Length: 174
Image (cartoon, rainbow, N blue to C red):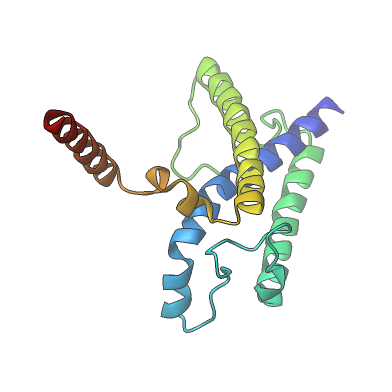
């Protein structure tokens, strides 16, 4: 039963890691993508993504929901069948998909990678929960509420330098 719990946690962790990146990315790029395909944007007037608390889930095309459900079910059924075969190289989360060959060949590296995936997934779950809460209470998009986190590092550095230069200039005037 522990392996079943581990499998569920891995699935949720992977989804959360995708959501942690996809949520702000959709707030940044949704209007441009929708405009390109000549479809309405899924963002609300405050540039927030649709969610249970934000509303707007009805703006998503039902065909997209069907596609997501179908793909999720197919991947889940594949994982379940792989787990039930009790193959000697199987462990929770191992779907045999590693096109970039990122999974380390040595045992220690593999164990570290598995641990890192769980840790990053747990942090992502907390992060996505934070996005939901932040947008619900502030009524602002995550990328608008914390813009420094979602802009190129060069812009951030420039803003910091300008701020420091402004503070130095102001202190010299005094």
